[in-house]
Each structure stands twice: as structure tokens, then as C-alpha cells.
Length: 238
Image 1 (cartoon, helix red, strand yellow):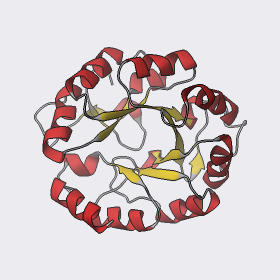
Image 2 (tube, helix red, strand yellow):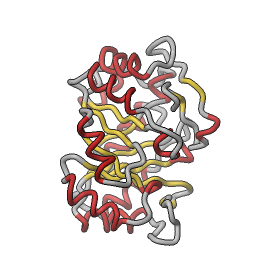
Image 3 (tube, one colour):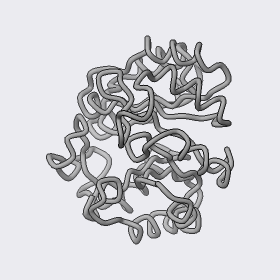
């Protein structure tokens, strides 16, 4: 946000502040990506362009620098995408996959049109949640039930989705394994990446057993609660 890496908390974006991390000094996003790669050996990193999501500018120049600085790292970027032109602009910058997020869209028809052009290899859907309800730009147009949305995504051709609990981001309050289990049962074959409130390596194991194909981690990495050693151990148990 405004060119710096910020610490997200509960989706209350105007209260976000620059990150303070055990991984590096300062809050430069290009340096942070390097730290993820060098210290954690990250192969894939999720980036949210919060200014673009909020319609208050963009951070495309920063994303350019991040992609150029670590070409071996696959970038997943949520930049409030609503059009094919926006999505292609990100892909042209070296982004591996474009995140199509519920909070930025009116309905799933819009998501389907984007997927038809981008294909499953270059797009995934983010089911943005608050109090277990899906957040839409127009709440009246689609179901707020995440399991219903997951089922529809599968029928539209999506094969990967993020479960992002906005109200748990940065809280260490724990992920919702019960909700994940319900979604995997409702949409068998869909790969789910879980984010929001994950606080320990034990929880990573629990999410893995509940069917998660991946997780989004930030706070737990910055405060040292989850380390590279933890990630190696969890991966070995898979």
C-alpha cells in the first residue's frame, strides 16, 4: 500500500502500518520478496495491491521490480481485477497467476468471463470472507455461502481457490478447518489455499489434513512463530 509492505489486520485497511519483521529491516516490498526467497526459500508469493483493490491508485511499478528481482519466484497478485485488460497487464509484468477476488466483483459471471480468457493455469479465485460470509462488491447478486460459491466455481471451470478470512488476518486467531472441510466436500477436486489467522506449525498440519493444498502466511513469518525449519518439517509430513 502506497509503495510499502504493510501489516494487514482484520481487513481494516486504513489502519494498516508498515511491517516489522524478523526477516528484514524496513518495509520495502522488493527487499521483503528477497527475504522470502533467501531465508524461507519461497517458491510462490502472494501480493495484494491494496491501492488498486481500494480504487485509490496502484503499485504496478513495484510489482515490476519484484518480478524482475526474483524471476524464479511465482507471483500470485490480487490487484482488484475486474477486466481482461487489467489481468493481461499483470501477466505481461511477469505475474504467474492473477487472483480474481469476490470483493472486487459483482458476480460469478464476471469471474467466468475472465477465466474463459485467462485459463485455469493463469487465474484462481479468492473467496473473501467475513463472519463466514462471502464478500461481494454487490452483496445482493450472489450467495454468501462459501460452500455454494465453491461448488459454482468448480462448475465454471475453476480448479483453485483461496479461502481468505478477512476478519482473522493478522490476528493469530486460527484458520477455520471446519469451513475448509465443508468446502472440500462441496467441491471435490478443487484445490484450496487457506489464509487468515494461521499462527503455528501445528495448525499447518491440521489444515493439510483437512484438505488444504496450501496456505497464505504473513504475520506468523514476520514475528517468527513459523520458521523455515517448521515449513520443512510440515512438508516432510505431507
